[in-house]
Length: 145
Image (cartoon, rainbow, N blue to C red; front, side, top):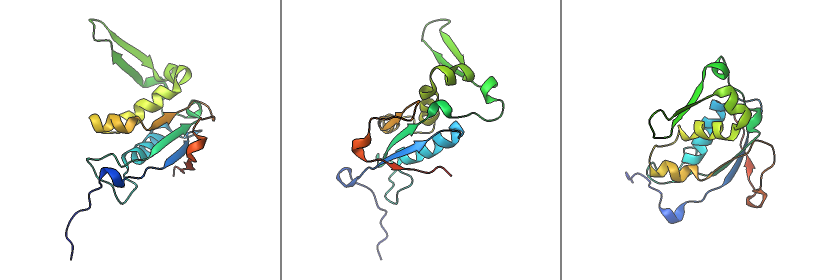
């Protein structure tokens, strides 16, 4: 009986490409599915300290929704590093002007906050519309439940 835990090696990792359609779906639901795919948790070969995830393309971010009162109450904040440099953007403005950034920030918060998470985030492509430039990779459609 073999009692060793499987650990993926760099050369054994095969990554696929997936498309997620965000139209009329909550941003958080899309973000959790994307983070799961980027991290590789849907695979039986998942290894926590190695990037075994897949590439993810998210389409139609401009049509993604926020539930409840989040559209009026949620505020995106970042700081320039200078005194008085706190910038605040309401969710309604962020979704109108830059829906890709809102989706990317939601996914980024669900990935590990270290160099591994930054490496995983590079495999994410987010588009406001339904057009993308990754047809050559033959991406598969991933259904969000």
